[in-house]
Length: 113
Length: 113
Image 1 (tube, each protein chain N blue to C red):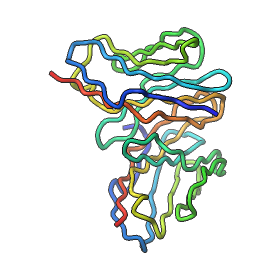
Image 2: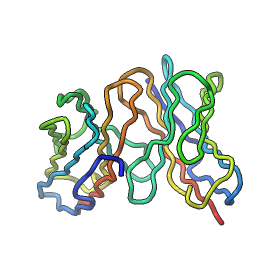
Image 3: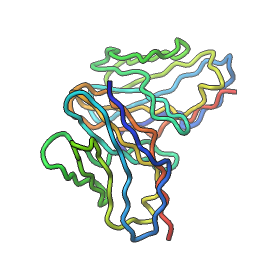
């Protein structure tokens, strides 16, 4: 079985401050990890993924995520948040090559001017 | 635009109605998915089609009936729905079953009265 947890329903941050969205996972075998973002009235948009290789993954819009195997975490980070980063962020995990993603419940990010 | 188009964007139907949701992908992918997104809940995978063959059915009630006539089109036929079926229905596509990224449509917001 595989699962993913996003412990925070909402993260509030001031514009210009660092942004972190937390994600922990549980899988058997090696994880494939993804972050998606959803803006209002839109579908999910891919941000970045970790399959193998460097633990620090860089993605779209200045976002990055760090894979930590010992802590089974894949936190999303951005050094300086923008108001336009306000959206719903989803972490997802897959334990093998099959395309069945397990999504977290999502974290609402609110960036205030 | 992600290359995945869903119609209609909004749908209101009574419990005795029959309607269909349509998804079309212009990305040349060979796998397509239906997800259900309800407030405060993780995305629920409903159906997966790979090479036009259904390969996943996650205990979805029979009042939801998928159809994949070709690799570019996916339908979700709805009949005798319940109010708890009101949600955002998302379609996605990917290339293969490996570490491929899933691309999502904007979704159909369904309200069952």
